[in-house]
Length: 97
Image 1 (cartoon, rainbow, N blue to C red):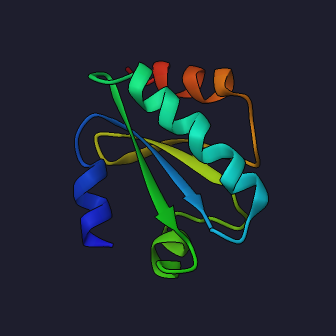
Image 2: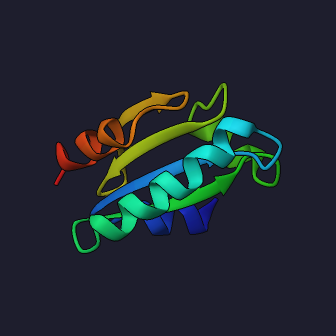
């Protein structure tokens, strides 16, 4: 969990809280990878496996997967629960840039 705090401490970071057993999570991964490349320099994307790191998911208030939390300088600014469009994730990130 300390590593996650370190990764979200500076700038805009989208943290994808998911699980390998979750079909919508698997659908979301390539969408966020592409978005991460498109936003390179202004925002980053980090993946958290909720099965492997349940404490990190609990600390973020994740109740279901997928959940994407947008952090700015270490503070959670927006939470998107469930599979959304790429445009929704882009908008959430760009609002914080």
